[in-house]
Image (cartoon, rainbow, N blue to C red; front, side):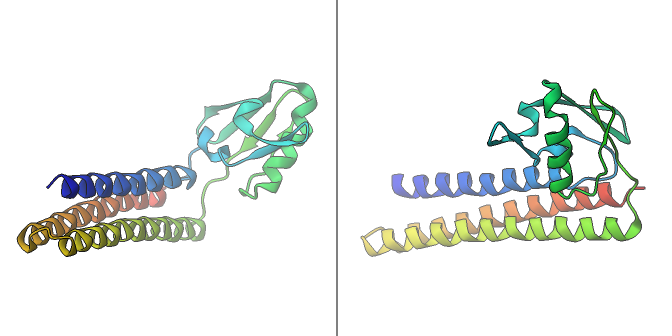
Amino acid sequence: MEEIEFILDSTKESMNGSIAHLEKEFLNIRAGKATPQMLGGVFVDYYGSQTPLSQVANVNVPDARTITVTPWEKSMLHPIEKAIMIANLGFNPMNNGDNIIISVPPLTEERRRDLVKQAKAEAEDAKIGIRNARKDANTDIKKLEKDGTSEDVCKKAEEDVQKLTDAYIKKIEEHLVIKEAEIMKV
């Protein structure tokens, strides 16, 4: 029984990891209003090493359509501007000599549909992660059955794994519905 509890706990942990990853990916899909997370994937060449933007500058959102980036060193203005362009986020940064100002354009209908597709793809990846966790758990349960654990106990454990899988897939669907509504809201 202890081994089965361990299998169920590690499966739950793995499934929670898939959900956490999905939530992190959803943060990167912008829904029209400016957030500092939009620049979360930008890496700047800081004295020869690729450094996250947040470690070389302050990123602020003064209003729903503007992001300001204030570097801690004035010499970093141009490298930061270049890094934002290279990140291909669809932004056109403007350098005013002190900081970088990014106007976040309103999303077009076509761009919203593309973002919804991207969100669905991320949700599908998360579901694959959940299914892989289920497969691993069921494989471990089968090994226990071969090693002498009773068939009834193993069947019950497989049912528990399936219940976990269904619950986590449902969570992913709920997250996707919320994200879709957020993206499509004008």
